[in-house]
View 1 (tube, helix red, strand yellow):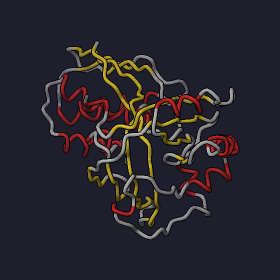
View 2 (cartoon, one colour):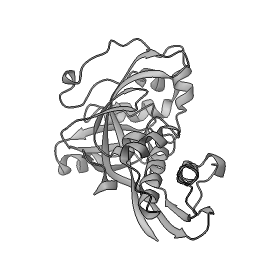
View 3 (cartoon, one colour):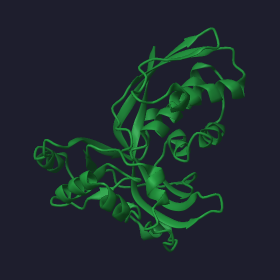
View 4 (cartoon, helix red, strand yellow):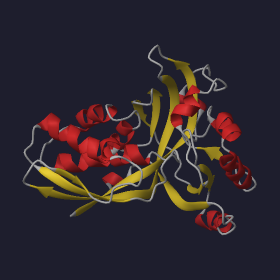
Length: 273
């Protein structure tokens, strides 16, 4: 088997500037990767079966994004090859770190190479969009300014600080957040130059804090030490630090009812390193 990384992402900023007729929200966001990742293992087989190993608990195979990505690429390419795919899951489900989308993107990138399909990155990203709005940024693999529903991407260079990510003991439903009547949907569009360090507010923050007490608890704790932010629609809370020593000092004080990790920001996805 060969091992491939499926890294986490942070939304350093997330603004909701409108809502389309089909219900999807129009966004402005800034993506940056972390050097903290799920690990996927692939073994190519000479039959068309896609076999998923290490299935995620409480996720039906039909809803598994790794399985769906492999089937989509297999159908698109009409390859006669299959694969056994294992997963060492590190990223929390419902945490706003993009774990499912990252898994799907890594599956597309890995099988494109292992099946010798020679699809372009752009073609893989277009396929990935069928699986989720965040999949293209993981396929492209660069820190990006995102618009549309998050799929219109422009590469940007950002500082690469150390981050402390706090994981509350809960999952946040993206659907429930976007359906909430109190969600801001009319932020004024801004240019990239308004966010020179990539940092800005998250329009989902207040809705998540009001509806998920565990997230509010994590936010208030971390905000004592540095400016705390929400990634995506949550549940993970993060803050940046200039040095590894600084982040380690705060991490050592993490309350036992939270989990968390330290990671370095990356402008290039660890998938492509």
